[in-house]
Length: 177
Length: 130
Image 1 (tube, rainbow over the protein chains, first blue to last red):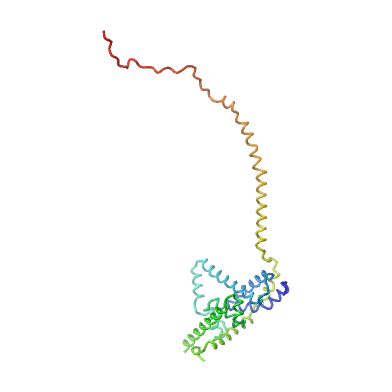
Image 2 (cartoon, rainbow over the protein chains, first blue to last red):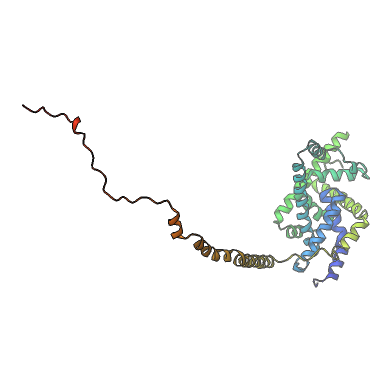
């Protein structure tokens, strides 16, 4: 694929929904996900001429997305720290509570709220693996290649995430009964 | 099957189904403005390719050289001429002969100082034997 503007446009059209939904799952905020998706494609255009096409385009975009999400998380913490106001800390406390946010309150089903609560409980590295494995249907080796981590680490992260999910759902079942 | 008795593969199936459902909902709800914004990414006029670090280094070196040349030219045009003029002006002002003539005269001694006077009357001497 030649590094031209037309191929970039085609790539944006093809990959934008995947990047957006991955950003939604990683950030759990559709508005932030929109901003991050835009930043991802901006960074992708900057590096488009240097992209060597050795890996799949989405893997490359996913790497950019992970970095953008990490940068966003750092900036969020710094913004909260910099304000040094009681309101900011109370906002942080609100974010840390287990209760549903206003956006979550409008969610469609119990499954949705369950999966959102689970994703919120998991660390970003576990979320990244889960999105690639179950949403994008990547193989373990594909995930290892995309995230540049050993396959054993991928397997252990998936296993740990499944255990967290099982434990959480068990607790929910107990509460219901 | 209850989750406490569910084996991990079934938990995996359940998680996969929920994640795919969640992702599908996000895909359906993708806002139109995001499509337009991502399409416009490439056309943004204020946005260019990121320059190579070496290019930045070269540009800053050239700018620094220009600033140094300008500073040197300014120094030569303004400060150095003043430095070359100043000794001539100073030598004209300070005329040693006139300066010495203006100083108060100190009388030059014409005779040697008087010898120390001995107060002979204060020196006890023995009375003359008569």
